[in-house]
Structures are given as structure tokens and as C-alpha cells.
Figure 1 (cartoon, rainbow, N blue to C red):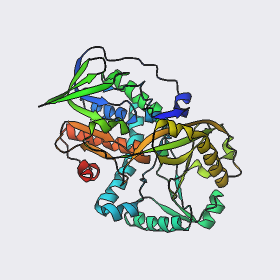
Figure 2 (tube, rainbow, N blue to C red):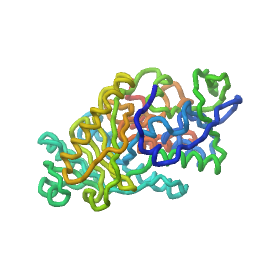
Figure 3 (tube, one colour):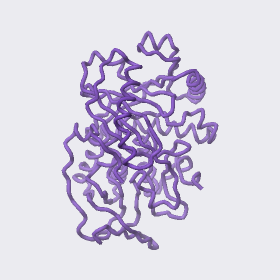
Figure 4 (cartoon, helix red, strand yellow):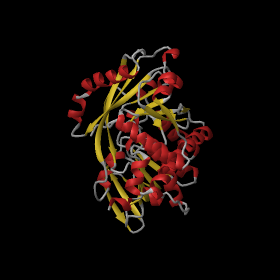
Length: 403
């Protein structure tokens, strides 16, 4: 299945990593990572940094799956608001999930500084707009619970939004702990870094078609018949991980994104903050370092790639209209547009760890709008499990809730 179509901005902005290295001999490794996107790259980083030998395989060109279609926003807010998640799961799970998401942004920042990988990481504020009166009630509840648990948040009323941001909305929540980055550049940079520094093995255009579980290992077979023997495996293949799971744990959705032609720096909204809204599916906005605007949303239940792609032209018009309604004075001319497929869960949380009874097969499934921050958490959790360190996050993000 194609994960995206159209013209994703990141593959135009960055030189395509022209790496062609199919598996042509059978090998052994300690840990096999299936998937070379940002999730697989972060897992490889954590394992290589811990001295664990690992191998990454992907059936595509490197990092050209869903990571290439990501709009790469980093927010501690999860798709399900904290007040609703607390009602659904309890504060003992919901609050630590939000705190873990908040910490992961700082961990990503530190990672790129220490490795020297240029992921175009940039701290920017986030503005969460109430779309209507119902949305205003939601953000008022959300403000109360975030304040109670000391999460970074400020409340802006209608007047403040208009005076300071020239935005017409009933109210908003604001924080200065968010960020944005280039997901594709990050994945490529991390993989190249560890190929040079830690002898990471990387095989592209290598599709895993079958596997055999053994008492203390796995044997995976590629489409050309070559095999990989490993002690552990990490499935970092997004929604395509479904074939490795005993049951479905995610819902598939189609999403759409546009990037504008460059505009003048003085034409942007205040602080060039990330903007999103309470309406579902939500509309969101970010800027790029080369003075473009990325907007996205229009999510629909995924049926098939053909139907998804046919909607692209209509979604371009709809997203442009939403932007012009919010910022009528800012020019937005679409330069590139694309659509993709992603997964979400009912509670908004990722699935990380092993399926009960399958202690050597790890899943790093950072579903929803927080895929990158969840992937950072997953990489750390898997490293800790393999190095024998206790990680309290296992009780929050594990598969027990999928039963």
C-alpha cells in the first residue's frame, strides 16, 4: 500500500537519500528493526548508543514511508485532550502520558545537539484555538486540569487573541514548550550517523515476507529468500505493523497537507507559533525555516489509496479556505500538496512494548498526531527493556489495554 501520494515537501526540500542496498546474503544480528522512518531511526539511535548491535531493513527507499509525509510538529498535547483522557483512563495514566510527551520534546532537542544531526529542530510556541462555544468549554476544562497538574499552559480570552494575534476565536490555550522539525532529515541523519559511528547495518528495498519464532530467536525471510536471524525484533513500520500483531489495535485515516510558496518574514502571524483547533478533525498550521506555511487536516476514515487520492483536489480548496478565514491578510498560494495514511487509537496513546507472551518482539507504534514524540518514548522504553532497566512508562503505553 502507498503511504502517501502527491508531492511531500520534505523530499523536495532535502536531497533524496540515494541509498540502494538490498539484503543479498543471510545475516545474524542482535536486534532487527523493521522500518527506516523516524521511529526506526530513533530506536536504532538508542540501541546503538547503548552498545547493542542492530540492523534496520525497509521495503522502500530509506525513510520514504509515512515519515516523508509528516508535517513534523512536536507538541506535548495528545490528540485526546487531557481532561477527556482522564475521564476515560484515569489521571494516574493520563497525566503521566502528557508528562512523558512533554519530556520527549526536550529529549529530542538534546539528541540532535549531541549527535550533530541537523533535523532543523526549532522551539516554537503552540496555540490551541477553541473553534466554537463547545470548544471554549473544552479548553476551559483543559486549562483547569493542566494547571492542577502543573503542565505548561496559559489561557487567552477572545480579546487577547484579537489584540495580540489578530485571530478571531472564542479563546485559546498557549504554551511555549512546543517545537517543529524536519522528520525526513532527522531519520536520514540519525541512520547515517550510526552507520559511521556504530556500524549500524541498513538494508533498503528488502521486504520481510515471513518469519519463524524459535525458543531464543527469530528467523525472518526476505522476498528474495535471504534470511535474518536475530535475538529480538522491533516493529517500527507504523500501520503496516498490523501483519505482526495478533489483532487490530488501530484505525486507519487519510490526511491531507499543503505547503505554500514562500512569503515575506514580516507577513507571518505572531511568533510563528503552531496553531490547531478543538474541532475534529482539526485544522493545523506551522511555518518552515524557508518562510513557507504548512497547513493540514481534512482527515477521513481510510478506505483505499485510490479514494484517498481522488479527494486531494477538493481538500486543497477546503484547507486553503480555512486558512484564509483565519488569516485573510496573509497570502497563501499552494506550492505542493500531498495526502497520506496514518493510524490512530481510541484513547490517543501509542502502543509500545511486547504483546503478552511475545517477549522478543517489540512494537514501536507511535500513532496519531504525536508520532515523533511517541517514537522517542518508544525508543527509550525498548532500550531500557533490553538493558534491564525498569521503565514506569510500560504501564501507560503497553498492550494490556488492547485486550
